[in-house]
Length: 392
Image (cartoon, rainbow, N blue to C red; front, side, top):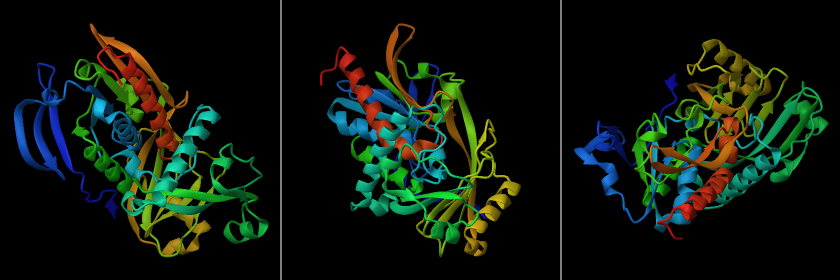
């Protein structure tokens, strides 16, 4: 069994570190982790076009990359965008996620916002599906069933999707005899192990820069960037001391797939361990899962793996013959107050810095990413208007 890693063309990355002069110095440029040049004394900020507004997006998961793409699309000629993150694909939380479109575990985020962001993302991903980029981006349609042990009210997002309806009794008898109620609709699988590199390429093609660097404190960036966009996910717990953040641990495995064509989810009252899901994507299936709030452990648990397999095989018996390809445990960035999408102004000494926050999406990151990135980009536009040197 392998860990969830894969060879992928990530393009050119800047490897940098902070020196005593509080400047970020470029140490190496790499492609696929192989150094191709070094510049031990060069301050990477010196290469920035000072006639353009300098923007740093913190975080290279699906939220950060989508936000960077939209900023470049909307304000490209006016801005210089750097995406800075300790981890890039295939090592982000987004890469390990199932990539299934459905609002899930989003805290106290208002339903109106969930529906707005989810619809924008649903429509955007469907446009990709119908484009020549679908294969490279790893996005495809999947028909989905949600099963329940008792009647469950329709979700607020049902009008966002195509073909939402209740499952019939014959359908329940065939697919989930133990269920008393179910939904059926057309959903989307967004395979982030392909989607994130596709977004990275769009950023590079638009003149953006990817910097592999852990940001310990926003003050490190003050003075170097005019606007900071915080898409650090669970990292905001430490980065900006947001103690409303907490992990919701999730464990999944990837197995070979020869028969499963429908996405299936079975929900029970036990939020910690008994939610079962099977998501087919290409020639694999993603099996899950767990949702353990407050657990910071990101190592797969063999006992949990066996329980997941048993539950999934109960739904789709043919999975008993599947080969486990990889297993993964990740930490969803849950926020008790819901998604934080707002701007603020901070002073680091005498340095005034505009900050846009876009984090706390928990299990809804893929589902809401494009809609959230749109609103975050609009907030960046407000910051641009407030900068005295900038004119749109």
